[in-house]
Image 1 (cartoon, one colour):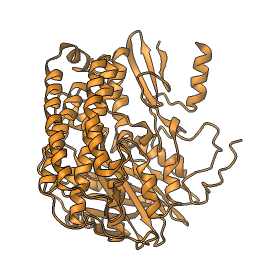
Image 2 (spheres, one colour):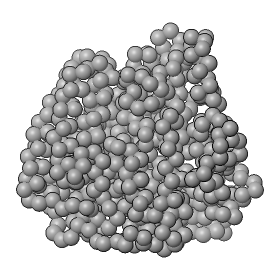
Image 3 (cartoon, chains in turn red, purple):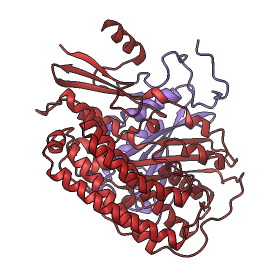
Image 4 (tube, helix red, strand yellow):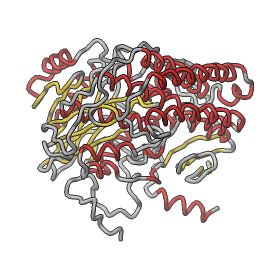
Length: 391
Length: 156
């Protein structure tokens, strides 16, 4: 006999409206499902009514934190469909800004992850270290978080040598801090106790459930779009794919911390090797790509992101599809939350496990979600209300 | 895992043509590392299986599409070369076999397509409404072209 325990949709440990439904026996979680459909906005349909130029600004608003990944994916997609070539310098700048966005996204995650562990000091420190990166974003793009940097045909602003010097200085300081955090995760007994062996996802499971991003890479699967399907100038910028084989929340944390270090190196390398030239080619606002279809993939901070577009030759897409990384990882997190094969999941571990995939619900709720093996909720809201009445 | 790593889009096309032959209505490369294959729904699963045997162990997404006189299910497979299998589904009988037994992780993608386009994935045990509001009218599929997003039907 189990008890259903709803966590959310409003919960102090969820930054976004998410309902995690747990079936518990005592302190043990035996089954789980996730319902993240509370912020659905119908963006895919709305994109069919926008011109390609207008669609960019809507695509940017799919998600606040991963907006650079979404615009990179959108512009790459529409450019290859329409045969537009962005200047070489613009590709380098896109890569630099994408990696800066990865740094601030991972730092945001580090803070929220520390918060779910009850480690509020680390939350404060991570957010303090994120500030200088956001200031850099503002100086490069004009916006701290929603950047509006990528446009069809290039990027909106260039960088000058003074700014390059400043960026490199800030990132060198940040590197010191990240190395400190890595040391902390490796040595602190409390962090170890809260994350080691928690949220276990074996390599087989991760492969079968099609996990992406740091979740897959912490389970020893080297899936990275930047290596598999380079979309900017990744062939020319050296970097390592970080892989851990601990298959737990600790591994996911270490993957992200190491990725920040890799991203810092990538930004510095990119800025050192910036080619000269224009940063943007002019594209008419109502351009019409030829009939056809195209898909593009980007390694967003949370994993692989896919955009697909079909054109009939008019100035608006017939269909625009977005598959976000959190949607791909939800099958994995539902499995992680379930006690199985001798791995017991405690209620107290649920926030840590759930935040270890870096869930981005506003990205995902645009599409669909929710699962449970054997137990399917046909009317989540009604059941939730019933549950409240019964309590 | 080789995951199609050593294959480029030309080899994938050749291999597919060799294995499936006349099953393919259309098979061409639409860009760098992008392959588009069109089949009818009876040969959809055979095509997915052929790719799985070629070493494709990853499904990126499943996309539904309303092409006017028929519906389409587009399955994007592969990490390095991305193969999009487009299966044609008749509008008056929107059914297609599920590939959940080949790739367990696709369960959400199929459910989303079912909900948004009304395409039934036969063999997927969890085709239940999860994403549209509880009071959404039955039989109304918001991503089909005959649904006008600017004037939504009254909820009740």
